[in-house]
Length: 477
Ligand code: PLP
Image 1 (cartoon, rainbow, N blue to C red):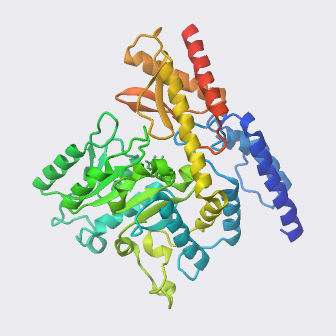
Image 2 (cartoon, rainbow, N blue to C red):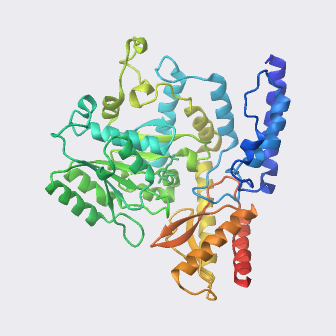
Image 3 (cartoon, rainbow, N blue to C red):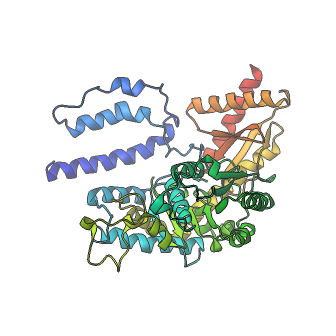
C-alpha cells in the first residue's frame, strides 16, 4: 500500500471506528444471527488476487458488524462487562505498527522495560507489596497456569527434568480451590499434567467464600493420605457472584504447610485501585502470586492479564530454555520475557496499558470503577424494593446476582428457574441489553455486571425497565 493510500484509509478507518461508537447504542447487543449465517455468506475459497480496501471495509459493514456481539455496547451486562477505551485502541494500533516480538530484551527493549515500569505503577495503585514483580500474559487462564507451574517447580520434585508420568516416587500433588473458583484453574491443573484428581474443591460459606476450616481439614486429610498439597488458589471476585475469599485467614494455612498461595483477582483486582475498595486485597500482600486483568475492568482492550509474583526465580526455573540462537551478551543483566513462559514471542501489550494509565490517571480510572459500583448498588436498591425480585448474593462490587420471584408464580424452584431462563432469553433477544446467568444454591440466577466505560445510569434504568416489561409480558401469557 502506498503511503498516500495508507494515510487516507487510516483516517477513514478511525472515522469508521468513531462512527461505530456513536451509533453503538442503536445496535443490537447480541448478534442477531443464527449459527452458520456468516459462514454461508463468505466465499469458501481465498481471494486469488488482491481486493481494494474500500471493498473490504464495505464488507465489514455488510457482513462482520451484523455478526458481532457488541462487547463495547453500554448495555452489555453479561459475563463480566468490560470495555476498551480510546487510548487503549491507539495503543493497539501502534503495537500493530511496531509489530515487536518481545522475546528477548534486545528484540524489544521498549516493550520489556515499559512493561516493568507500567506494572510497577499498577502494583502501587493496587497497594500490592513491592516484592511482587509483574509480567504480562494474554489471559488470566494463562497467568494462573504459569503461577501454578512456578508453584510446582517449588516442590523440588524434579518435575521439569523427569516429568510426572511413570514415577512411583511422586506423591499425588494437590491444588485447593473453592467450589466457586473459575474453571481456568481446573484447566491449568489438567494442562500441567496434575489431573483433575490433583484439584480439590473446598465448600463455600453462605456468602460464597471459601470455608477456611474446611480447607485446613482437607489439607490435613490429604497429608495423612500421603499426598503433597502444594498450592492454594484463593479467588478475589469469583465469576458467579464476585465473592471474596478470606485471603488473610488462608495465609497462615499456606505458611504452615509450606504451600504457594495464588490469588485469582482477574476481575476484582482492578477495583483495588479505588482507595475505599483496597480492602478486597486484604492479606494479598503475603500471597505468592496474584493475577489481575486490566482487560476486564481497567478499560484496556483485550488481551492483557498481569501476573504479580514474589518468586520470579521459580517462574524462570520452570520455563527458561535458551538455545544458542537466542543467547545474547546482556542476558544476565536484563529480563527477557520468553524466560517466564511458554511463549517465545510476546506482543507489545504494555503500550496500551501505559497509554490508558497516562490518559486517565489513577484518579480517572478509580472514578469510573467507583461509578460502576454506585450503579450496581442503585440496581440492588430497586431489586430490594420490589416484591417481584430478589437478590441471590451480596454485591461487594459491580456485579448483581438476582432473579424474578413474582407471587403469581409458584415458589417452586423449577418454575422460577424456567421463568428466569425465559426472561433472560427474552431480554437478550430484544437486542436492547445482554445479561448472563449462573446457578447459586441450585437456583438459576441472573447476573448483571457493570463495567463498560460508556454505561450510564440511564442504561441501568433501561435494563431494569426492560426486565420488568418482559416479566409483565410473561405473567400475562
Ligand atoms: N478468573 C476469574 C475469576 C474470571 O472471572 C475469569 C473470567 O471471567 C477468568 C479467571 C478467566 O479470564 P481470562 O479470559 O482472562 O482467561
